[in-house]
Amino acid sequence: MSDGILYVCATPIGNLGDISQRLADTLASVDAVYAEDTRRTAKLLSHLGIAKPVVSLFSGNEMERSERLVGELEAGRRVALVSDAGTPGVSDPGATAVAMALERGLPVRVVPGPSAVTAAIALSGLGGDRFVFEGFLPRRGGERERRLAALSDEERPVVLFVTPHRFVQDLSDLARVCGPNRRVAIARELTKLHEEVWSGSLGDGLDRFGDQVKGELTVVVAPAPPAAVSDTDAIEEARRMVAEGMTISEAARISARTGGVSRRVVYQALIGDQDPS
Image 1: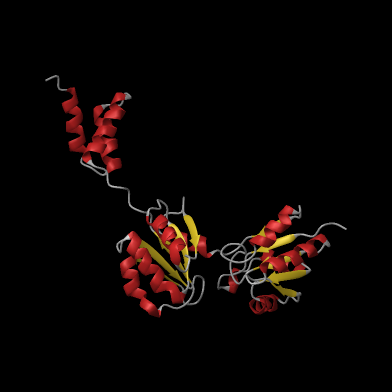
Image 2: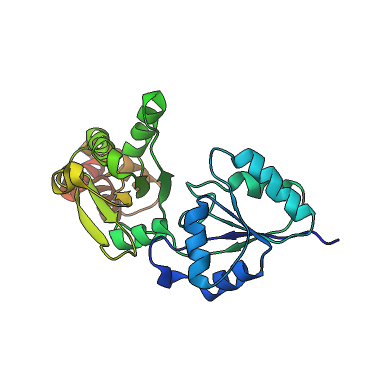
């Protein structure tokens, strides 16, 4: 008997209109569906007119159900893995099943789809060439403080998932470590009827939403501003460039722009280096 196939299926994050034809075809073709929330998945299948056995696989039973899922694959069955919304294994259960299947040499395929992460970074205006996905912050303790400290110095935009009941605490702590003026984009109820995207500072975000915020939230925090550079450091960097063959004018321009200091100050220091007296 040939091995089965595990299909890791991304499902809509709010709008059923985002269901792809490939997702519908895949769910119709499998022998079983393993789901984080069986009731929600049953509604999705009903919407598509598909009847399939649905097995629960959530954080509380992930290890045992992953073993069962892989057993089905080894028996030659085709299985779809879905979470409540978005992609299994991305801040949702699923990674254990995928790892088990790969370790046993069983084929795993992905059916990509809607993502709150990429939707939020695209809507944030903070740049998506490079970014960090942080998921949910730890609830408390030293690990939370360590993660917050790391985020305060992060040079790339950071995408976070935030639950409504932790919104005030998470934004308050981010404002504390990053400063209340750090820019942030808050995306609420993405793809749903009451979708809202707000951009401003962390401090203003707390005032704007307060403790009355509702719905699913994805927050994008702007990168840390470049570290301040002293005139002395900028001059030394420009001297290094001149020693390597760059002109005084070009070295002063680049060093001043990079360090955020006065070009005139750097240029005058380099000219002074050339004064024989």
